[in-house]
Each structure stands twice: as C-alpha cells, then as structure tokens.
Length: 473
Ligand SMILES: Nc1ncnc2c1ncn2[C@@H]1O[C@H](COP(=O)(O)OP(=O)(O)OP(=O)(O)O)[C@@H](O)[C@H]1O
Image (cartoon, rainbow, N blue to C red; front, side):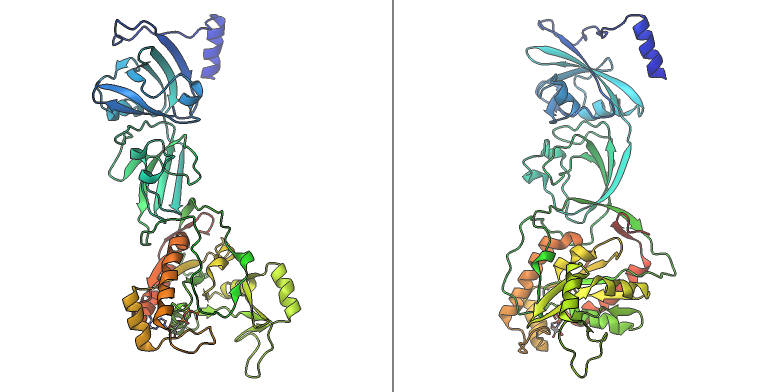
C-alpha cells in the first residue's frame, strides 16, 4: 500500500526522473566524467564482492558474480572504487565496517554508494533488502576444498568441508565478501562463505553457515570416478548391473532433519551392513543377532533353486519357481538379485518391510548397489560401513583365526593377497560411498568390533540422529 501511494504521488507530481544526489565530497577535482546510476533491486543480493585495497585505501569491487544483479545491470566492474554508502564516506573503512553499516538495519534500507572507475567515475544507487528469509540444514555428500575449485568466484571465502559434514545454511539477501576475510557479522562458528554446489553453478546468493554437528565419519575425498573393480573372490552371486548407481549422479547436499526416537519405540530402523566381501559383515550381523535373537531378525533371501531335504521354506530361503522369480524381478520387487550356477537368488523389498512391520530390527548385508533401493524414507535404514583395519592388523587377525570366505566354494583360509584385495576395496568403497554411511566400524579385533556394534545398535534406538528430510516421522 505504501509503495502504491508512493507511486501515485510520484505520478501526480510528474516526478519521473531519478533524483541524482550531489557528487560526493570525496570525488577528486580532476574527475571529468561522472556517471550516476540508480540500481533498484528486489530481495536479491547485489552479486558482487568487495575488498580493501591496502595500497590506495579504497574499498573496491573485487568480483562481479555472473548472473547477479550487478552483473545484469552492466554498470559495475571489478576494480570500481566505493566512496559512499548512504551518504557516509567509506574510504579507509575496513570491509567489515562497511558491511556492519549495511546489516545494522534488518529491514529494507537503501544502499546508495558512490563508485568511481578510473578514469571514469561512476555513481551507483541500489536498494537492498537485507533480512534472512530462508534456512536450510544439509549434509554435505562430498568433500570440498575451495583452493582447488576453479569455478568459485572468491576462493578465500570458500567453505572447506568433508563429506557428511552437517551445515546450517541461512540464505540472506545481502552479504559482501572481501577478498581476504569474511565480512558478514560473524561468530566463531558462523561464517559468510561460498559453497560449491557441485554442479559448477555460480551462486548468486551469499550463504551464512554455522556448522551444526561434526560428521561422525573419518574424512574422505569425494571422487566422481567409480573405483576400478579389483580382483575379488568368487561370491555367491553377482549383482545384476541394472541395480548399479548411475555413474553420472553427482552427490551434492542432502537436506536433513533431526529424528528423535519416541519411546517406547515400535518401528525400528533396519541396520544395513556395507563393506567389501570377506570383511566380516555376516559375522558381525550374526553376533548382533545372537545378542538378542528376539529383537533382531535377518532377512530370508529368495531362490529359484530346488529345496534340499533338510531345508525349510522360509527359513534358509524362500523358494520360488524361476518364472515367478523372474516376473518379480521385472516388477522391481527385489532390492538385489543375481544368478549363481543357473539359479536365481535375491532379497525382496517385501521381506525387509515384513520384518519392520513385526517390530523387529531388520539386519541386512546387501551389496552396495542395493542401497539405491533400500535408502528410502519408507525403510529409513541405518547404514554401517564395516571397514578393514590396516594391512598388518588384517593379516594378524584373519590369518591367526584361519578366517576364510563364507560365500565361496574355496574353503581355504584367506591368502595374504586376498586380504590385501579386501583392504583395498574397503578404502575405495569408503571413498566412493561414504556419504551414505551413518557409522563406521573398523573390524579389527572381532570381539571389540562386535561389542561396538551392539552398543551402537542400542544407541540407534535411543539417541537423536540427523536423517534425510521426510524420515523423521
Ligand atoms: N575381525 C575378525 N577377525 C578374524 N576373523 C574375522 C573377523 N571378522 C570376520 N572374520 C572371519 O572372516 C571370514 C569372512 O567373514 P564374513 O563371512 O562375515 O564376511 P562377509 O563380509 O560377510 O563376506 P561374505 O559376503 O563373503 O561372507 C569369516 O570366517 C569370519 O569369521
């Protein structure tokens, strides 16, 4: 209404031309051309960063962000000197103070500034709305080092982070970042910085971050490359490639919310064991189940092979005809499946759901590719990565126990070479998939790893956790 009346008055007075303020007192007498520009914007940032030129003592435009308001106006360019803000001279002021002048008012305020471009001085008026309007809690799905990003407009203002770091992002409409340091009002854990979108987009918003919780996972570097398949033992069956992750999927950020398990808990998050074959996922799963057999339940897989005399349908396997299994596979009822010696094997989504519906903690050790189907708001899995210890410990613990592969025809204990393969694959899986992991257990000493797992399983049922948005029901 105020704007309407304002416009009405302007029209009534036939006041159509922009009112140009007097030339600021700081303008040198030798300036020959003065361009005066009025830049009126809505709730978007100016799209430019500033810095203090220590040699000249002038505050200058450091960068113009592609696509931002300043860029679209075509009136500003890097190197422009800012002389005044709201009629107040800014020469010699620290960039922090300049921003403080701007952020003191958290409602709409005008931000006229005088910029001079050598040799042609330029006067810019802009109206900037400076109030926060959007808040986002996200988990970073990749690690980011601004120093190595060619696309970031201001590396010094980039926020470095590791995969799985949680961030609170306050998206404001104005913040000007200096070339050297953050000039948003900051606290120790709050910074105005750029983030990498992972999509090579230039952000037109400036983001105010505060780290809300450290990631529980050890640091790792995100690489979009899929690790090369290294030599593996023959496993029970090979996962069909259609279930593979899309290799062109680039993990970026995942919005999260806090999940507080309401006691008494009735719906339990399934526990998913991920790790290289042979690392001990099934051994740990068995030990967890043995700790409370009434509470934990393993998923019974399906097979198209003939039932053996000692087997009970629904105990070792659910037996189906090959035709039935094939039609269910086509109907996408299996989270993973494969063929071994002419028979189909697989884990159905329904059998996971049925364990959850019976108020049990479902235990599952699928192939990593199955995560694509399992990691949903409906199942809300808690994913534990079973990680290999260092090579020396691998050899010591496994060779001493004569540990051997369980899902293979080879009954010989692991060779040193096989153990090395497991350790190498463990490292590559962690690098590639760590953004999916809720926790990591290093399977060094088996008793200690099992004890840590039992403790963790109890914690999952009691303690609050950050989960993807929509999971905290
Ligand atoms: N920490 C450990 N120390 C010694 N032996 C271990 C340890 N963890 C597991 N093992 C042994 O390693 C062998 C392989 O373990 P397990 O079958 O659980 O691996 P897995 O990850 O389930 O792989 P697969 O799918 O091939 O069975 C088993 O003999 C197991 O007892």
